[in-house]
Amino acid sequence: MAKQDYYQTLNVKRDASEKEIKQAYRRLARQYHPDVNPGDAAAEQKFKEISEAYEVLGNAESRTKYDRFGHQAFDTSGGGFGGFHTGNIRDIFGSGGGFTEGFGTIFDDLFAGGGGGRAGPMPQRGQDVEQTLEIPFEDALRGTTTRVKLTHRDGSVERRQIKIPPGVDTGSKIRIAGKGTAGTAGAPPGDLYVVIRVKPHAYFERRGSDIECEVPVTLAEAMLGAKIEVPTIDGPTSMTLPPGTQNGRRFRLRGKGAPNRQGNERGNQYVRVHVVLPETLDDRSRELLEEFSARNPMQPRAKGW
Image 1 (cartoon, rainbow, N blue to C red):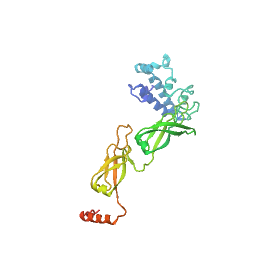
Image 2: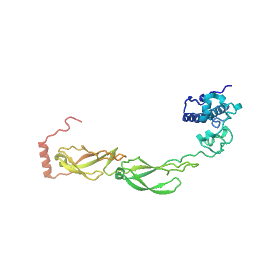
Image 3: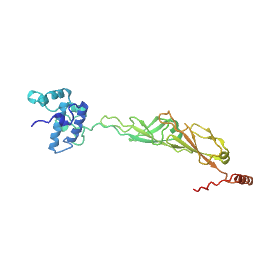
Image 4: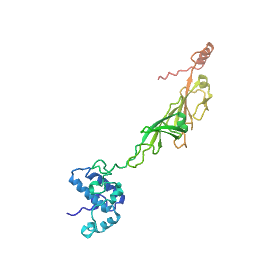
């Protein structure tokens, strides 16, 4: 029976790159390996055909011969292709103690635990680990350097100094390479991610890169206008209230918000005015307010709700 074209066997074009051929072989080998299809004679035969095709097309010299002469280039009677061997397979999957006898052991490292168990476990990178760190609101915006206690899964404790960049927020992660769980069979360890949790502030609230706060003002300041002092993360700054400022009005302080992670731009701060009224009035104050009301008649509910 005539052999199928090797390119068709691997389902690749004749001008496929070495990388594409390797990827096609890996995909098909995983699909038809006898360990994945125990007792399936058709899958085993397909696996042998795939392996034979890659043995030829996966080598530049033998591929050139095949492209010129086809299967005749490897006629065993002429001393050509002598059957499948493992040189190229090691290059793809890594070598191990299972490469000794035929197709059944070629993928022991790849399918560890699924076959005869003759090879050790495949190297596997360690898992990443997360640990929460709570920091003050100001440190999250300004950035800081702090010492943290890292508790590893084996119970060991390590104290390490880490740099927290400006602009982090709750949920931000700082990566510490190689401090996760250990890898297996010589593989590298995972990473540790410090997850930031920002403590609530007494009067600042963060909305993305913007900051909001509420500032109390007197009735006179709101009505007559005033220059007042308001807090920012950079320290107190002055802000002008125009006459007739309404309760709840928001003012923007440009560039006084949170910095971005690159540190080259900042959001804004929004100051919400809260007019505080006196709870009690003396007789003279009441007379003045009554006179004021008479001189400034208003009907704020005339248009309904």
